[in-house]
Each structure stands twice: as structure tokens, then as C-alpha cells.
Image 1 (cartoon, rainbow, N blue to C red):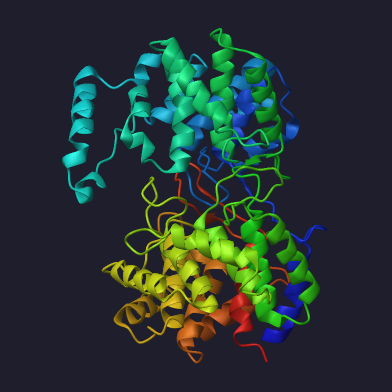
Image 2 (cartoon, rainbow, N blue to C red; image 1 turned 135 degrees about the horizontal axis):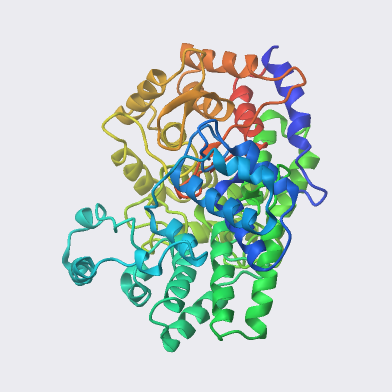
Amino acid sequence: MNINESINKAIPHLLKWQYQDGHFEGELSSNTFPTCAYALIQLELGLPIDDRLIEWFDKSQKASGLWGLDSSEGEDKEATLLAKLALTEIERITNNEKIKTIIQKIPDLKLNKWLIKLFYARCNRISWKELNAPRFLSIMMRLGEKLLPILPKSFISKLKPPEQYAPPVRLFYTQTFQNLFIAEKHTLVPVFIITELHGKKRPKVIKELLKWLIDNRCKDGSWFRVGLITALSVMALIDTQKAGYGNDDIEEAINEGNKWLQNLRSSDGGCREAINLNVWDTALSSLALNLVDANKYKSQIDHAINWLIDNQNDDGGWAFSGIPGGNLLSDADDTALALLACQRSGISRYHTTIINSVKWLKEHQSTDGGWGTYRPGLGDVSCVSITSHVISALLELGGSDKEIENAVIWLRENITEQGYWKDLWLSRNTYGTALAIEALIKTGYGECEEVEKGIKWLENCQNHDGGWGEDINGQRIASTIEQSAWSTYALLLNDPNSIYAKKGIKYLLSNQNIDGSFDASCVGIYWEVIGGYSDPIYPYIFALMALSLLKK
């Protein structure tokens, strides 16, 4: 199969994921944590567990008896402990023989991490005391909190709380909590409510935590549109009801939250972690079609761009999920890619969509020159891939020389000694490195030392089959379409005649199915407790971008 033929056969498969309203959205794969949490909530609410859920647990169990965090080949003890708890609770009520067989395959594992202990304590499997830090450690933690303002940031970044003990509720009232990443805040508040209700039971504290939780609920009934966070929040509200703090608003929040969780079910029977990533999918799909043939696919691109414009937040940015009526925070990555897609579709730089998104991006640049996900200084750290995407978006528009210059300096300073850039999202090292190389080449730094190191690192990491692959921890694995495509794209930008890039193209062509489809693979994300996910749109987006550089 030649390059043009490969592109033409792949395009129809990408277009299958475009909806009538213009947006693109792939079905994300299921994950163990949200699936287990979902099962426990259904049991607690007296709702039935269907056979599809049991099938998911059965098919997802590895030969070792363990489960992974996600759809990859990896295994995870914490995910297995949570799966064991969920299955044990289901079997206790249903007396299902198939579940008994699944449980028998699970090896003995020791509880360690506090989040898993929390679930076990709620099911009366362990004492709540096992979540609390010993008195001497609690005193040391309090002392550490007082010293934080005078400790150097480099030292603070290396500090990690003990993983076996739940964070103390008092953390909610500290500046440390205010500085946490937004997903961490949303995770901890329901945990604080649950532990307070089963601990000191202070009414004032419970009411203040409840107010935060209710005030930060999305309009669609979820919390942060994330499965595990929403499940924890529903659990907290259930415990609140049981403790006598219930009212009609809390009952409504429980019902709406659980209804949202039920919509997280994937076709494989499990639950995915996020409802969708449709802004990202739409922006990237539009960009890929634009690179292949902007004229031929103009109607599909315009339809996608109109959807993006309709789903832009009032502040000028875009959230990762553009469900109408949602009140999800804008983030820099979706904003940069949506802006770039709008620009390449031909929208005037004087259009309010462009003006407002540029303003949002400039206001959210960190003092170090990079861009984090949400708000500079509030738990966010600058991210290589996001910074690279913003550079590309601002560069094409023009008029942001100072911002781009500062971002380039940050990128160049943040290459590792080994020659790669470590990213927060996706399969971190190949993804971050490929995008950093792209941004530096586009800004005229293609000859710099950092690009040279990054290119060498990618070349050295190429697998024998011509592709690239790494797991969520950066360990080399079998090649995937997604990682091979973005690595090949970067190498082609640097040198269209690169032998390594040619091997990458050959890998993509030889691993395309006869019908033109590509198989999606699991990619990693930031929060390790979630794991990764696969999106059927990704292999087409990234493969088409790489192949388009050589099309005739």
C-alpha cells in the first residue's frame, strides 16, 4: 500500500466518528478504578448489576489473576485490590458462581494505599483507624506544613505524603490545598467528607466541605466530568445522608451523579474515566483533514469548526468536553488546539473566537514561560506538549513574539540529560519529545542543540520494526500506531529524508489493516491511579498527520 492509498483508505474510518452536529468523538476504553467504583455505588443504591459488568471483570483479568489500571498489558496491585472488593461485594449479594471463580484466581495482596483502604473501610472490611497516620507522624506533618513557606521550591517538589495514610481533613483549610491541581482538589474534598463523617464528625467542618462539593458540581450532574471523582463525590453524599445531613438537594445530586456515572458505560461493559474528550478529538480531526486536503474535506472541517465555536467557553478558552450547558474550566491544551484548528480553517484573526482565545492563552502563560493545564500557580506545572501546542497556535497567528520567545526558552531549558522531554500527558517521553521538536523547528530553532539531542533520542528509541512504543512509566514496549506516527512526524519535519522516519512510515503502512483501519492502543495520562485509555480516533489523526507530509 502506498502513502496516497493509505490516506484515502483511512479517511472514511476517521469520518465515521464525526457526529451530525459536526463534532468528532471516539469512545474511550474502560478503566478499572471507575468500573469498580461504579459497581460499588450501584450496590449501595440497591440497583442491579448486569451481566455485561461481570463479563468485563472476567475478560479484563490477567492470567496472573490481577487487573491493570487500563486496557494495556500492565498489571496493578491497587486496581486488583479494588476489583477484588467490588467482586466480593457483588458476590455477597448475588451468590454468583462465575464471580466466585474469578475471585479464586486473585492472589493474596496486602492493602497499602489509602485510597483503596478508604473503599475497604466503607464496606466494613477494615477499621477506619487504618487510614489515619500515627500520632508522631501527624505531628511531623503539621510541623512540615508550617515550614512549607520558608522551604525552597526545589525541596518541596520532592516531598511526597505517606501513601498509606489518608490526607488529614485540616488540609482543606490550608494554602497547600488551594495550590493543589484542580483534579486533586476534586478528589480530596469527598474523601475529607467521608473520613470526617467516620471520624471526628464536626458539623461545621462537614457543612463547609459539603458546600464546596455542591458548589463545584458540573451542570450535567458530574464532578469535573471524571468517573472516579464523581463516584467518590456520590459516595460522600450517600454517607452524608446516612449521617443525617441529607436534604432534597443532596438526594437530587446523588441521583443525577449516578445517572451520569451510568452514561460512562462503554460497549465492553466497563466504565471509562471521562465522559468524552470531544473538543480535543474535534480540533485534532479538523487539523488532520486540513493537512490531508483542506479543499476536499472543507464541508467536514467547517462543520467541526462551527461546533468548536459554539462550544467555546465565555472566558475565551475551551474545556476538554464541550457538552452544552457544562461549566467545566477552560484548559490551555484544548484552547490551543481549537484555536489552531479555527485559524487553519480560514477564520479571520479579527473574529471574536480568535481574539478571545488568544487573550485567554496569554493571560494563562506561567511566569516560567510555559503553559500548564489550567491556572498558573494553582497546582499546575508547565507542560511540554501544551506549551508546544500554544507556540504553534500563536506562531501562525503572529503578534505574540514575546510570549513565544519565553516559551521557547522554557522548552530548551527543560530537556532532560538523556535528550528527551518528559510530558504530563499521553505516552509521555515520545509525545513530549516529538512536540518539543516540532515547536522548536517551527520557531526557527531547528539547528539548536536541544533539537539535535531530541532527534537522537527518538532515533535510539526506535524499535526493530520501525515503530515506537512506551508505557505510562516510559518503559519500552511494542510499537503502537499513535507513538510511531507522532515520532515519525517530528523526524520528517527535521529531515524529510531521514532513514528513521522512512522506517516509521513503513511501519505505519505495514500495520494498517486491509480495510484501511488502524488499531488503537492505550496511551498514558497524568493521574497514575487512572492509568491510560485508548481512543479509536487517535491512530487516524496522528497517522494522517505523518503520512500527509509525504503525500503527492
